[in-house]
Each structure stands twice: as structure tokens, then as C-alpha cells.
Amino acid sequence: MKGHKKLNRQAIITLILLPLLFWGCASGTGTTYPKGELPPPEMVAPPNRDKGYKDSRTLASHNLTAKGYDKLQRGDIDGALRLLERAVGINPSDGPGYYFLAEAWIAKGRLSQATRFNKLARIYLRNEPTWSLRAKTQKDRIDEKIAMQESGA
Image (cartoon, rainbow, N blue to C red; front, side, top):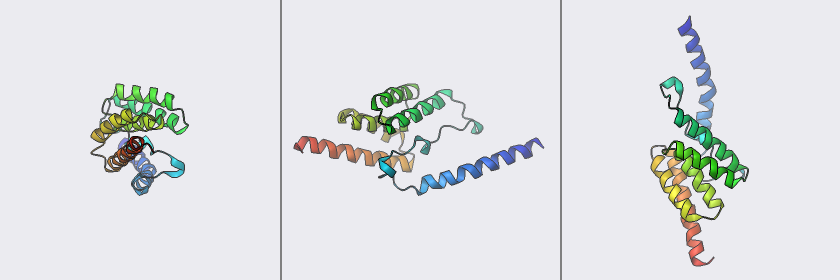
């Protein structure tokens, strides 16, 4: 009976998460988002404790990244920077954290910092196709802004 309950719980979780997975896959390449929104950090999900991941540092980092993302969406760039810097400090391989740090520095017009964090995002997100493309698109935006600054436009 216990195994049967576990199977039902897993089936229910799968039924809930499966549409979200397809929604994420169908959302496109990440070059544009509704109302100028950024991609949610859940696109690279935190480790699932059921699958044997018990790294509290990774979970804490993901939670801070999600909170930093929310602040970034609300326009609180400095608040987002504080949270995202803590996230990557806790888990230095937090690819989405670096991605959003680059976004925050873009918003502040500090393109050299954005470039550094984008480079780290591309390194840590290279095995996530959707995020990898987003990080590449972000790099292209940064490069375009740098070129515009250098040309005096």
C-alpha cells in the first residue's frame, strides 16, 4: 500500500509538472519575453530532493536567485544585486544567478560587470540548451550596447 501511495504522489506531481515543462520548452528561444520580462529561474530547476540531491547550499542559492529575479522584475536593481551576489557566493556554479547578475548590471549601465557575469553564465549554463541560447543572446545585447557606447551613439 505504501508503494502505491508513493506511485500516486509521483503521478500527481508528474501531471502537475509536465505541462510546465512543455510550456517552458514551447516558450521559444528566450530572445523576447512578455512585457519585457526575464525568463524565470525555474527553467533550471533546483535539485529535486527525491532524486537524491540533498545539497542545501544549492537549494539556498536557488531560492536567493528566485528572490533576486523577483526584485529585478520589480525594478529594484540594487536589491536584486545583493541577493544574486549572495546566491552565487553560496553556490559558485549557479548559472541563472550569473545570468541575472548580468541583467542587473546591464540595467545599471555597467557593461564591463555585465560582460564578466555573462561569461560565467555561459560557462555554467552550457549544458542547458534553452539557457545557453539566452546567455548567448544576452552576450550579443551587451556587445551591441558596448559598440554603441564606443561609437558615441
